[in-house]
Image 1 (cartoon, rainbow over the protein chains, first blue to last red):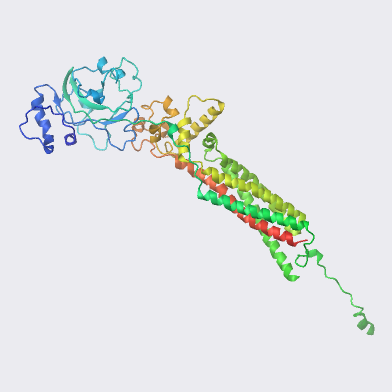
Image 2: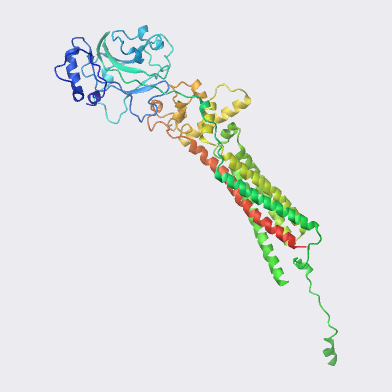
Length: 275
Length: 259
């Protein structure tokens, strides 16, 4: 089951001073959830080794400047009743060590509208186990978008609003299962999630006008050609002004060339006269 | 005499041919520049908003230069055939003036094309797209032009932003001040639309699920037509000017050899 496979990489939050019947090393971390029910039943709280993670990287909107997207906790809460409510807890990292599971959601201490100054953590996205059916169907994208409800973000009457996050964070989240007002199960805290920060458009470097080689070549060649033509025009006008131009190399106009008919001195008349 | 008679006829023939080609190229230049000025891709508002629309000025000059080239080529043909010095002098001087204008058009088109970089359009898009409070009427006109153009661009080319939808996330924008990030990580025109013009899956689009939003940038759709426009004006004009240079040199030589 993939949820437990993920536990191998989660941060172990085992309480110090608790005796273990076998030595712990990384390979046996997956055995921890089997031990925990024995230990946790004494406290009434099942602590699962699963840690909430961001959804897959191919999503373009995985983290934006005020929202982030988590993978749904499928096949994680195996021993939870169907009528228990699973909450998502969002907290600033400073509130994680001193977080009290027993504070009820909807109270001012856990109200979204007071986060983060007046309430270091808030609880939202409450649902029941049938909404996270196991196993996860292949090919489906099962995500939870934190920060998608904008309508209730300002109204104090909805303290469990899934409103947009007020800043870039970082934030840590976990799932908490409540039966009535009694916490029965929780996951470990996620790694800190940092959102994007938007820069001002003024910081975009002003369009650098690099002169391309093509433009320089074009300008240079055209300028040279134009200069040659102007020089030619000047030469033309100078030579037009000077009358000394002319001579044997001029082309005569075709109509100026006329063949002069030379009349010979009655050469052809004489033979006519003989007859 | 016969030799120079042949020579003159050959030169005349060459000059007439040269002028015919100039005339045809002039008509082609006019047609090409009219096509560019008509802005078939609807990108003019983007240039107008940058206040750097000189490639359009270059195209306008091209229209008139093309027509002038056509008219002058006819004058040139008549002058060469009739071998009249004054006519040819007028032809040469007017051609040089037209040459200067066409040179200006080519250099303007080539130079101003270099200004049109992705950052220029990115900055303009972020500052003007859906800007809600324009300063004055001119700003309002340009803002509306930019908004309409971008909406059309994103719909027709299935693209988003200049380099991608992350442009809307990485930078603050006028759009962001009126549209919250949670509801509009990017404009809804970036979503894949159905036949009725509404997003196929708005949640998928907001999440950025591949297939429900346009993940590529629009820069290619902008720079492609603008490059064609600028290079078309600049390099075709350059080719015409090179040919005209040869014809004018030949005409000057011819002029100097006739009485």
